[in-house]
Image (cartoon, rainbow, N blue to C red; front, top):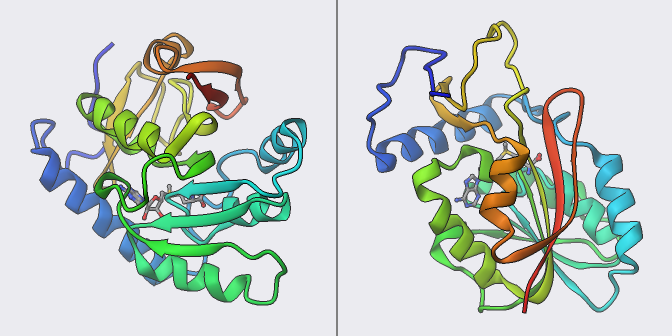
Length: 225
Ligand SMILES: C[S@@+](CC[C@H](N)C(=O)[O-])C[C@H]1O[C@@H](n2cnc3c(N)ncnc32)[C@H](O)[C@@H]1O
């Protein structure tokens, strides 16, 4: 299976630094141009709520929302008792998130930082959530992502991932087989169940892995050791 460009606006050989700079700009423009984002309805909030319920109370535990955006996931984590940090490399959505939850008890805090810059002390978090960062990371940078993720978690920490499966389709995309695309200036990777198991199972025990009808995987896993 090979990647194909959906929009012919970027060559596939684009250096990662250039690709990721364009991607960050795409997010910035999206947040600055509208109070809603295309991913606002991506990922199953009920799945997150049910999974947290199964894990038990979050009181006394710390959670990290990686790429928090306007804080949808952070709010669910803090409502379940976790002392939550929503991290995003853009300030604008975090400012919106902050205003949204100003009046809440146990409100999340928000940190403007890049996951890859290791902004927190190692082993700081009991749980990490990624809704929409991993699936915009090129396969060749999977190791960098895993390193940063594992560094942030305590041993035995839980990782909750939402990401595109190969069955996910953008509107009007067609049904050609592909495992990546450059779409509207940002990179999408599409995973199979087998690939996710191959990537995560050397370091994590997979607790559950389910695919939604619209082509999202929801995975819960636990860092070994
Ligand atoms: C697809 S959006 C999802 C936002 C949010 N998780 C949600 O579901 O509403 C991805 C978010 O990750 C942020 N992001 C991407 N790469 C990041 C990185 N390396 N470090 C921190 N934030 C990042 C983007 O700014 C954007 O807000």
